[in-house]
Image 1: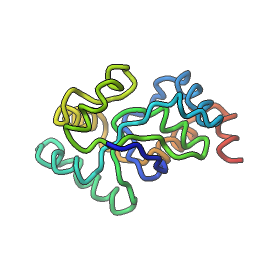
Image 2: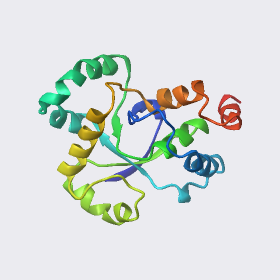
Image 3: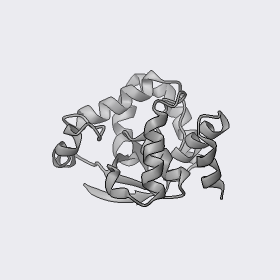
Length: 172
């Protein structure tokens, strides 16, 4: 398990938009990122694509997603699936900063972050396999769509879900 800072264009965002679930959380994290107060930002759990993909393709239900995923991968240089932290990730993009993340690669990493998990700020399950299954079920509950955090946030802007002052900050 290691903490990293990664550009939003290298992270596959969660596919549960629309709607923007908590404008209040976005505002809060935007201010933290804007003011470089990252001690208030919990790292976003990220899992490398190379680790999670073999688990996904074993499930027959995911095969319909596979063509869309392969097409997405052919056009994007992404490295990680996001497991949680959509407001934190969008706030990083809107402030022109890298996402504060933590790489989850195995059972040992899950055990090391138990304290963060218990805080309610870190979207993992009790085991590595449960965490991957939760990601898989999340993907399967939503339309077949893959996008980077950057693309997802741009969609939020286009739909008018991001306050104008944040857009102005991003574009300045």
